[in-house]
Image 1 (cartoon, rainbow, N blue to C red):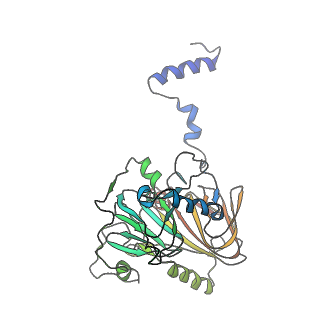
Image 2: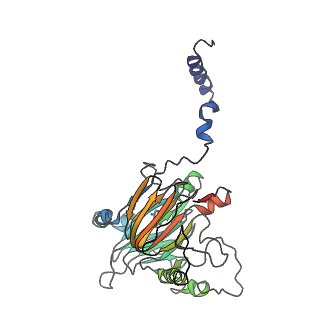
Image 3: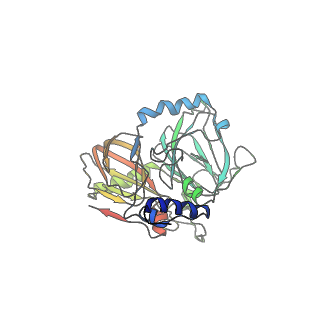
Length: 348
Ligand code: GTQ
């Protein structure tokens, strides 16, 4: 080897070490250990007005039964082909029509449902059904049987659309995905609707309950309650310059997150709110419940309206403004980052 042409001798050397399945760190050090996050994830918005008809059209193309889950995956434009919204999280819009059932199964991926449109459909988790209303936040923890259904047209059923949030990419990255189908279409119902909420949803709990599970014993967090709490705080004068009035959803048995790997939030922005810039390492997916406004994410600016979904990548500054009073739901991989001591936030 000579030094007359260092590029050529290096190339030849790289080929030689490559045959031994080795690579030179010095060529990749800066991208392997960056000075700051360099997300491939891009800021993006899905305008409900543009995608709603497409979601509904899926209803005449395939049944929930055939599809198992009739979902349009929202794919981040920076992560093509990955069925991912962020490196760790997935988002999709699921449609269930009157009279349909999405058959029971379970998987190691944790799921949240945020109800976008329609009411009266149900999801069953751990032997209990819960009825969906717009703005409700429902969880299906890892490895719990879950099936979804909708009353028939005669019984007053209407199309229901919800946003699915799962940790599919994270679980895939960990090679920890398992799934199985239940032997029947629906799981047996062993408890009346509202049972878990009666036990755990009122700042009370069963006398001898021992926490043995990192997931919340409540699996539906109704919008009426979340909205009421935000309203009361705003009336009391609470208003953060970055967040407006923002609360996180909790597991009432532990005070922790409803599920171990996904954080969920809801925030209220009063009319005329102009938020300051905030960034954090948990890439966050937002779903607009009410209102209208704009969000700046890095160099992008989007107008948001009800049911729009948008994504703020890790470390991109986010600035929220509302022209009329607005409510936003959001979810992120914050508990995972916090557990690994990787959560950083900056309010500027
Ligand atoms: O409802 O069980 O969007 O298993 C993706 C995978 C929903 C579900 C999704 C799933 C589900």
